[in-house]
Image (tube, rainbow, N blue to C red):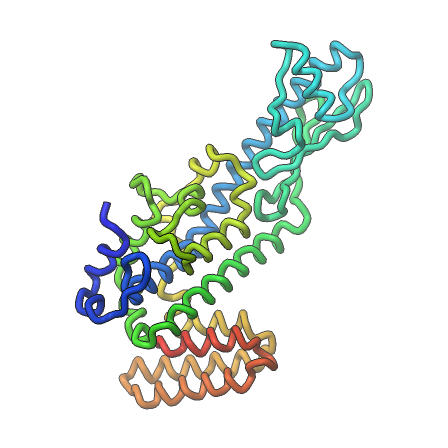
Length: 350
């Protein structure tokens, strides 16, 4: 498979020859394109990955609960009452070879993103619960199975907010990563949209993430992806952040290798996230809590877009300048300085 550098360099060999080389064999513009598209692709793919992962983890949890109830029935038949804890149940199964079995992870009360606990242990009633370890991230439904095999499902409190905050944190970190790189090479500001506008570039970067070539990017591939460099790398740092936010380590290797998405599941246009007027307006509204100010800034972006559409680049540049001036004036007040820098930098790509 071609290297990331060779794939991207085919897009603009002239640009590659005149750009500064950075560690890892990439020109700065190549590195920027790879990191930017990977960051945006991941942001677009993550909702689909999360949906598939939650379904797989929930199915795994249901199977684990069934295993525990079966083992608890064997415990009651032998002891005369249900076990008061999973540790007691695990110890019993370990002593009764062939009668029952409890996985070591289940015995600890934590497995594949779920936490397990015994409820209402007594002679005739026994329930075991599985709830997501991180609400909205490792799961969004709490499961309850009783001694008769009846299973109940209920939404886990805080799941919607946990999921929303996770995706927002990843978007914020991705934007920071991209804008930091844009600021390293001012020449890249006028070129990045052209790269994003090519479906060939998006496909090439998806292939870079698809390390085993099965046309699917899995959780394991995102988790383990690294560029060919021994140095501390912006992309490595971003992906490490994604791994932490999505709690990849809460799941076993098998589930991480099975859960993945195809390029056809990509929900949205990569360029629209950061490098189009509507995408920058969305980001502005996310970063600016004052609705009146956000509306004013988005109105300027809309006017600049209309000017660009009719070919009036002088007006477009003047309006974008006004957007940047307004952003700078509010930095440290109604917009954090970091967010202001990101908005101003991204506006220079339009």
